[in-house]
Length: 530
Image (cartoon, rainbow, N blue to C red; front, top):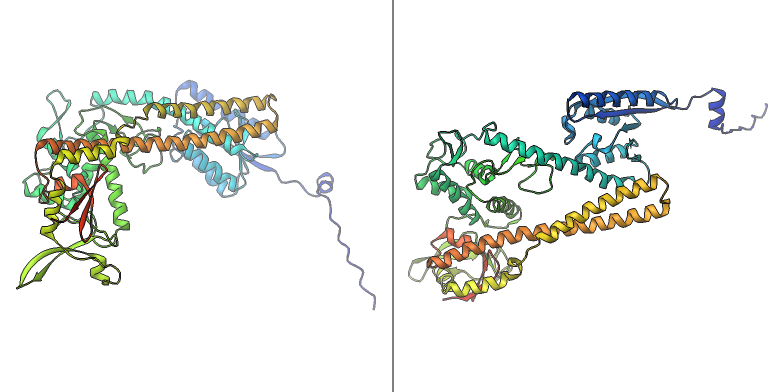
């Protein structure tokens, strides 16, 4: 039998296949995206030129296969979901039908930084590059994303400028009654005989009461019950208040005298936060469109209080802070283990029934986990009253503890940081142009880009710190003013006045021999049991 021949396998160079015509190198499927932001005639002409330009460019390159022109004429670029052809292009990329996307500039692709980077990164993960012609940037090249982050932020700045002008226009429309404030549904407002929006004083007082009590720590269900008990009716005349109605008032930015068009809780493309952004897209925000019932600071504090209550609900063990069947409900915390205290009535001596507060952890799990003791309610009340005796002395302690926060005025520094961020953005753009013109070599370019990136990170972190300090300043000032109001009113602190107690007190830590009263505005009062 003949022996089988030795198997020989040789690799055929791809170049040989291409030159002999045995195999054709696959073409790259290239598509283009074109957009103009208005439907004016001159913009339409620009749009047509974009389409013609990219059609000619793609079809002229033999190594490219024409993947189509995706175009959205006369549609804003601030939100991708509002551009149907853009989304159709993205889906084609996800389906593997496109390998490369051409765009005239970053501002044509998106003016919202989050949208731009999210889609660019998604396409990059899919192996699809985006080439921006004006900036000469290909997202698949090294270092492209750092530059893109800054350039897209600059494109967003263009939208900020446009938004400022448009907000002015919308303000005029509000004043002319073209934007409707539904006075039949919004408590606190009515229309005058001339058609202007004016404050309905009695209703406005109810709105203020809801905000004050909520900020004082009163739970929404209790606010509803007390409104009903006082005979106060809703805007529709109902004597029954539902929690959603109260929450709707607390979430309605119109009480600040401002209005969000579209009601999405995102005022505009600016980073300035006034409420939760659920739409992840910029909206127009009109300021001073009608009389304000509450201040912007009070509204912001109410939103922060909502978040605190959500966090408290998620993490609390035992009785929640925001229960209020009794004046001290939710305020008392065990000094031994940190759990909430719960009220119960126990029998002592010859059948006498006494209200007392005990740690929920000890009650549920025994003294092996918490060796605290019950404290009678009358003892707690006397001790709290004693701690607040001599309110002027208390105010001195509070002002000393809050001095650093109350003296904070970072407005000038915040403006400087924001200007420094813009300066770096401009410097990066200039550096990129110099590199494209051959005036900066690759090594120096990479070093400077890395330096700018580090500076940008540091400035953005400082910007966040300054904004947080400003928010704390507004909160402390509000509670300090509230505290002074009670001091100068001459009223004594009383545990039967739950509203006042919750306005001024964050929590009361209960030890076996003393109380620590932690005030909302900072500072702690210590008092041994009376």
